[in-house]
Image (tube, rainbow, N blue to C red; front, side, top):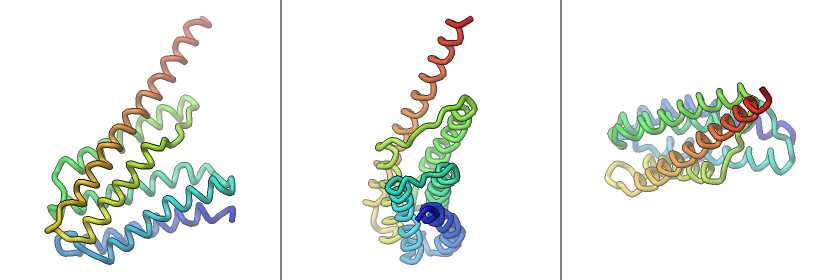
Length: 183
């Protein structure tokens, strides 16, 4: 049981190139096969986290690879659906911009010894992003309601990202004040 969460994360990483090829080749970004691959990969995100917490087998690899796999899965879906004119240009700009900002922020936080834990809002945002993207692939270009699910998820992801930034900035300020007080 100890290795199952990491194995699921690795399986998700392996599924991403297959998903990319299938969705890229899909007419108008509509593909039941791509939606199934995306859906199964998305479900492993929840399942590996649940198992790691339930059996207390969290690992450094999992803390790094799991969010990376999520970002790669979501970002690739957004880019390909944008390419197929299923999403406007703002979606990839905001998603990828947020991910780059978070990666840089996490790097700063990690260099100062901080580990940010995932917040419920971030998990909800990721679930809605995955749901909206999967439904877009599934229902085809004539239906726009899955975009609304995606955009609600995007809004929540941006709010969660802002919370992470504020948290890191607050910790850095406290650290600076302590440093000035000791000098």
